[in-house]
Image 1 (cartoon, rainbow, N blue to C red):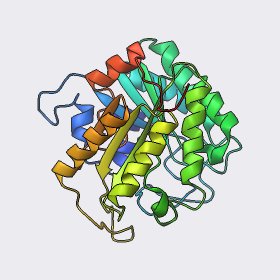
Image 2: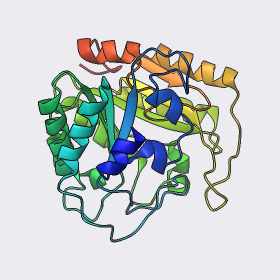
Image 3: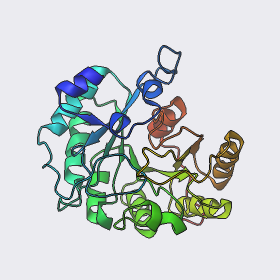
Length: 290
């Protein structure tokens, strides 16, 4: 996979963001040489490898003027993924505030190319907030993707400390809500990092807020400091506490909760339960929704 990525000039968040789970996901859940569930998952990072934002937790490189998107990237991504034989692919991207639609159209082209070459593949898009542009959200939601994911990242009180000022708690909730309502049967997903100084009550409220806008799948993981120039870890959350959050999330009505120290947004995204959930679209309504 690494070789074909290089040949086609593709990026993965697995490599660019220094994810600790690369072996497990790429090997189908079992780690290097281990036994997995056979559902290999890769997370392709489209729209280049340079972000226009400067969040204080993320190791991806940044610039105000990144290179223009590669027009061949949608097709090259589809060709690469089709050749790997994976069942589930996650497309994510850097933030591209320099583009009129935030890169939504490029995302959509990639999804369509994938579905044309391999109709049975499940496609998850882990997106930016497109600066809150709901038309861009609709454009991507209508591209035939299976899961719309956008990370709220942290609790409300820490947004300005953790994320770029152009991001925001309410903006992220609005994006997730719109993706849910603009496409019937759309499955939505989000993620929260722990260990940044948040309180238990704040985590509970964030989970309640995500469920209120219809989010179906939630992941929670430990924040790890990429290098000394990023935010320091305030707390190492215990495995027992992660288990508590999993159970609490399930009690709120999330269809699936992945919670653990090394869990990341797209961690084993195509796990068997999630794959069946997406294929069958057996989703629960949000509390208080019609």
